[in-house]
Image (cartoon, rainbow, N blue to C red; front, side, top):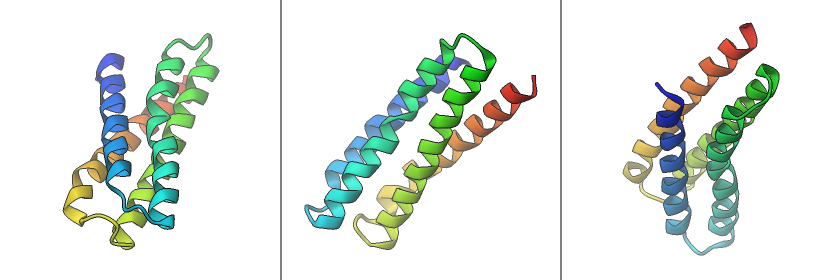
Length: 116
């Protein structure tokens, strides 16, 4: 996968997370989760983009690690949304799957960049 393709997937993921956040109920829990998931779910794309322009391999690995950490947090928020029945499970299935795939890709990339 090229860096451009991965960055586009991360941008698309951020947009989808924004739509999930907008669909959450206007309750204290819904608002809290919406704020948190928007923060964590939109962060991986710009961090990855910044990592692609890194001046060193160490900086590249660090930026990718931040993206991975934020994706993992987003996965947890998606699980909480599902467990709290804030949105229908079928609405969350595809985005949760994409989060899993993106985590796997970034995890391999971080591992590879640290080995070299």
